[in-house]
Image (spheres, one colour):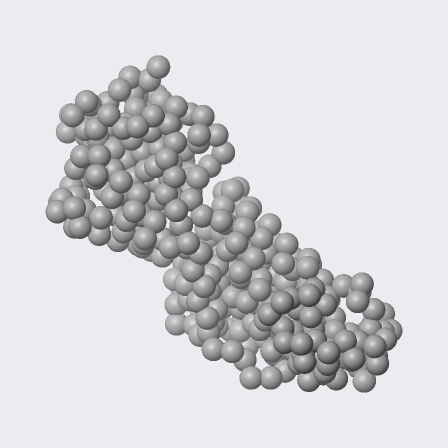
Length: 346
């Protein structure tokens, strides 16, 4: 029998004796009702035979590994990625893993070095939010460790990913503005090379098509990378005589920039956007926000990765795609409709 570095039997040992996976052992020890009685009895018999201590951490899922999971995000200053990281850490801690975090700062050329560095530090698996669509370095990494992608899908890779309902959320939020009578909606989006930017623009267009409204291409701005670029783009649009009567923003940083532009212009128009954010409910602005559980993206990604680690000695599962649902929430006063024109800020 293989002993753990601490000397005692591992959860993997229990699973081997009971002829189940270490993940199933973990579920039994947590009283998961989804496990059959026969399996529970085999696991508890193995626990008793081996003298496994159930208060040991679940780091015994691995055999002599480093106990570390690597996580690469694109912008840790963005609350979305902070929440995603907390979700990863929650599940990793549950299974006895530590998380090593790296930030690519949306720099595509920086990401391969971060991935290589984590592998050099002997992480047992990687969760990556890709900075771009060029992912050859991730294919190379997969020869060494399992890789799960979060928030953005694989490009030419056969691996797991966890995504948000980007298209559906954008379509629903845009449709709510159209239902209020807004036909001149500006689109403020992140770079089109990003999956989220493309999908959210697609949802924006789909809502217009379903409403029988032709979007004005002169009101579409893409390639915005932070609040400052979003503020500038929104200010230019608001300054036009034929400007928009509502705004759609593809993430929280862009929404922040657009709100600042509205404040400086001394006016307000309805704003819809992805990502709820702190204090959005007390700004007094007509906001329609696409909300979702960013922590759950991290939790799901960590579960997929740990499941692959648990199966690495057997037949690996087929690539899986998990989608986290979105919902639209409303804050502030109702929109007065486009006929009322922009309202001055109180």
